[in-house]
Image (cartoon, rainbow, N blue to C red; front, side, top):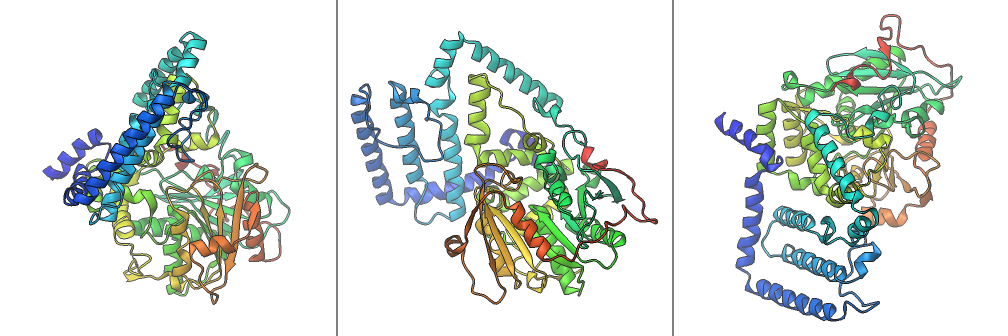
Length: 564
């Protein structure tokens, strides 16, 4: 008890990171590097070469059109402003990029270092270097200096005001500036409907039909429990739920309650039983004997896959199809999120949750921000605090700031069973006391991955093909974990690849799939709609809202989504 309490008190100073895990990673790297004299010599030689390159560049850096000795990575836009081409800023940026390259070499390929420890060391060093990038400081950033001169320092005054506003908002728990323009039920989550079922963990929303006829099979959406459901019902033009309703589907969506300390003992079984299974039962009361198109987003997709496997094992044939959106079922390669998941880190998170009763949304958000720190942290600080610019708020950004919590027991079980043990993919995950296998699922599947997903990398999502034996349509869409999914038709620059693999056809690994899958311009939503309708019956009159025995409780978006 004392150890857990002490670890929880240290957590705010370490941003929730296990210092023991970090130390083990650096010990592994330093120990092996210290025993590899050839590797050390190579790094010394590289450092000398980089110094010579940089000095030769500096000697010519004041000349126009001086060729740089190193180019930044394609995704790195910190030095894109023309001012970085002039003296002395070109010398500063080249020095930083050469240093970054050297540390990249130093932290990779050291024989004997475990892959996990190598990734942790490389990631940590990259974050430390990003903190001291010359782009982050007033005197070393030509764009900021030019703006300061042009505005007579007004950008710095405005940036200071932005900083003060952010500090006050954070201390009071207020949302970020501009979020008030996206009020739940008024500006977002506005698709008409009724809450037709409620238990301790979910509210189930049935959406009002907008067409005279609807497909007979309802669509049930299972959102992730680490996000509020209305990411799929943002502004009307950005709402996947409204899109489905307008195309003649009866849609139900689960809205998770936001658990507090009193819910610390809610388990994964509770989320399965009170969540997916109770929702399916409620849908069945409104539409008896109709199979359901089940849709799971992110962790909601993982939970749906567990439920579908358990149902298949019990001979429960209520699913007409299953769609998994940016959802992993195999966690052996979870991408950069694995940097924060090992036995030591999980133990540290357990102690934080044991003390609080839950994991707070701000503690989760920190990990996701550091995975893409250039875009989510440093570029934002540059614009808002040094350039004095506030970027416009969007419905997706406002939703992202509307966080949720995770109960202690459930999240502990999830981390151990999924990330550490990979029980679901290994047919070891127990439901009702017996392990389930995804191979038992019989309904057709549609799976979506996104190209730049840091949370559920598409190659990991693609492993669904190895775990099931049904016809599976896999779609890879442009964008990231959220932007790639909130992808309505008509937005320029969007594209996707799609390919259906039959259950008795040859397996295509991710690279082979990329080569074989045709590319299409536009949104993946119409492609999915066509797939859904191909697996649906002839349109008929819409069902009633709720039932006589289970009448609607309140209008959408309900009450749980408003919990803070």
